[in-house]
Image (cartoon, rainbow, N blue to C red; front, side, top):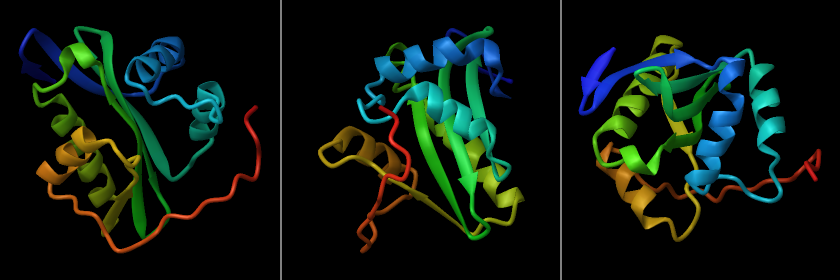
Amino acid sequence: MTNMGNGTTSIVSFEERFRAPVIALWKKCGLVRPWNDPDKDIDRKLTDRNGAFFLLLEDGSLIGSVMVSHDGHRGSIYYLSIDPDHQAGGLGKQLMAHCEAYLKDLGCPKINLFVRRGNEQVMEFYESLGYAEEAAIPMGKRLIPDI
């Protein structure tokens, strides 16, 4: 637990009672896309045996979330979100440090993450944490449509 600003924050594992607030947070942060059903993304994450789904709470209320995966070599970060009313206070950095420690404890040597083109604010955030653009082109293929 940490006291950062207005209240006491804690990082906990996802609990089902937070499903609707998490989806509302993702929408507020602009993370939901028409081709991704957030309920299905949560369901999929809950079957992931190689990762975690962390929530950032302030005095028991949801203010952030992040999904972490590990494939045996690389770690991945998804759906990092901090409520816009709580941004710029170091909470995103705190959540990322938690993810990095979690992955390091698993023996994970590297983290990959994706930032949508044109999202300079998020690029700057990750760059401030030591992340850098790599000479790789992400490629994808949808196997199961959400809509």
